[in-house]
Length: 321
Image 1 (cartoon, rainbow, N blue to C red):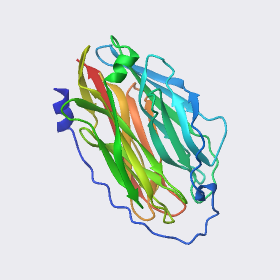
Image 2 (cartoon, helix red, strand yellow):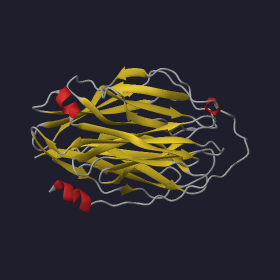
Image 3 (cartoon, helix red, strand yellow):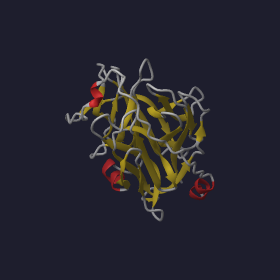
Image 4 (tube, rainbow, N blue to C red):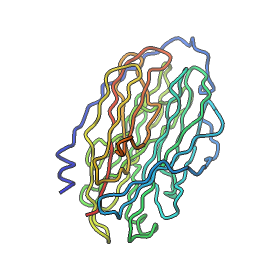
């Protein structure tokens, strides 16, 4: 069965511990030194990036993408909604900016109505205005209305941890649920917390991690595990979890994983393990390559001070049998 195959293919990679090193405040402070703004969520509809179907032809996912029209230093709670009223939001991602100074991700998680995905990002220590790109993955299954499908989806967000390098996991029920993906959110003041991971850490477990950088700024990270009931009125869900795709060690590491044919990609994850001052994530993005494979890419970078790291990328998928 697919679930047993997913377990056999499971590889858990231990992240290297990231040490906190304080440095003199010799950078031009950005507006990120203030507390994260508490502005209301700004919502935008996305344009269709691609649509894919599983081998049965009954499971459909569409990835929607939106790029902001203006540039800012800090983006807080930017929402992208699915462009199909029959779909439920089950995954997403975001791209901040790599150069010249760069900006890093601080949140990527589902909204409460399951109609969209919410993203936050910030510059850090060095001012950088940039346009934010957001992604949301929508799901629909033939023979089920949106409300019916929503009742078979599971969103758990109990995982929370506080510290300079916090890490927290949320879990689904292994007896009834299939993992579709997950998300994360950081809560911070001062210099802030930067994302270092949002990834599957077990067959029904999703872990999120973050770090302060250059200056001590402990905060909280929250994780989401998103799943679907294995047994549906229209059939049985067969899950797919890719092996982690690892990058080479670099100061700007990136890696891409893909979903095998016959499955639709429902989510993706990634993390970075680093040394020196460390690296953080600036992009988690779903896409499709020139060969038609659905992919998920993870990109990280050092920031203001040298550091190197390795990224790992995962994809999650399902098909109906």
